Length: 140
Ligand SMILES: [Zn+2]
Image (cartoon, rainbow, N blue to C red):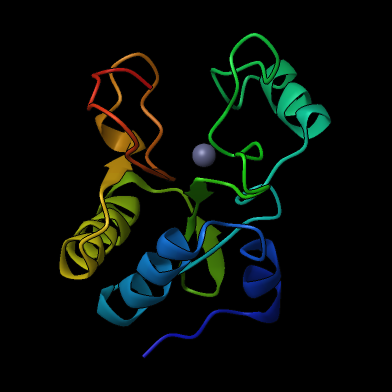
C-alpha cells in the first residue's frame, strides 16, 4: 500500500476534484509507487513558459494553453506523475506504463473520462494525464 507524501498532496491542491480522485484511487491500484512533482498540477503562465523554454512541454502557455493552466474554476485539468522505485524518482517507461495502467483503471471505475499523454501523437508525454473534455483528438 502506497501513500502520497506531504509534498505530492500539496502539488495536487489545485487540481480538479475528479482528477484528484482518480490519482488517489490509482495509488491504491498501482503496483508501482508514484508521486506528483512540483510542476505536476496547476501552473502559472510563467511556469508554463519556463517549461516550454526548457523543452519539457510542447505547449508555450500563451498562444497554446496547457491543461495545467487554470480553467474557469481556477483549477488544473491535468496532472503529471513520476514513478517512485528503489527510493528514487523514475521516468522509466515501463514504470510509467504501470502507473498509467492504474490511472486508466481508476478512471474507468470512477467514470471519469481521462486522456493519457502516452497516447499523444505529436509529443508523447507518458507522465501526463488530463481530463477529456469534448471530443477525443489524436493530438497532445
Ligand atoms: Zn502534464
